[in-house]
Amino acid sequence: MTEGTVAPVPSDEPKSAATVTDVLGHLEQEGEIAADYLEALLDIADLDGDIDMDVEGDRASVSIIGEAPGADRSLLRLVGQDGEVLEALQELTRLAVHRETGERSRLMLDIAGFRARKRAELAELGAQAAKEAKESGTPVKLRAMTPFERKVVHDAVAAAGLRSESEGEEPQRRVVVLPA
Image 1 (cartoon, rainbow, N blue to C red):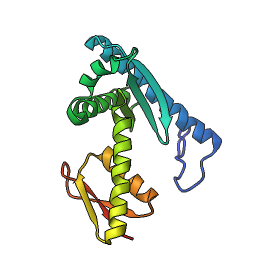
Image 2 (image 1 turned 60 degrees about the vertical axis):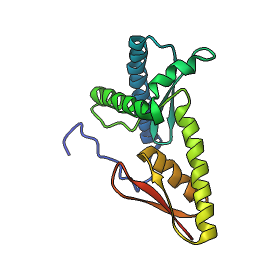
Image 3 (image 1 turned 180 degrees about the vertical axis):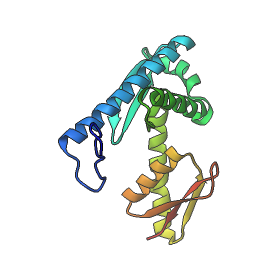
Image 4 (image 1 turned 135 degrees about the vertical axis):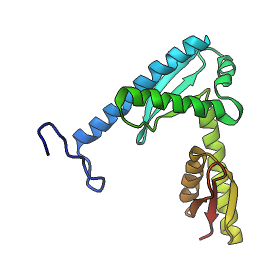
């Protein structure tokens, strides 16, 4: 290794407090870059919204919420049908973070609570599919989903004590819940 180069910490070794602090600092930096980018976007679109930044697990999370009662309705234009505009804005925001940091971002964007509501619905869907697979003893195939949706369902199925896997090719990739 050359001087000034830092060896990566192998993922199977426990991370030191300094490494955890570095990762947290990097994720907070991602959130700040994203917030600046999104604030400029809101100004261009002449929309009002508060930006909330957080770190959830191993990714930065940024939410845009309405400043006043009823303001979330105007923000719903940034969500689009079934979250399509939200997905596109999330990718653009990730690109803005990449441009500043030089590293790929896994940042999660939520607008007007859309993703939070969707997460709750999907967790319920995963729990119901797990219950059905347990009772019937046969695999349960769900509709095609985005990677975000599949992750939430996989987590809910695991919490119910079953296994699941994804099958198919994008955009028709779906979760299959396997019986015990």
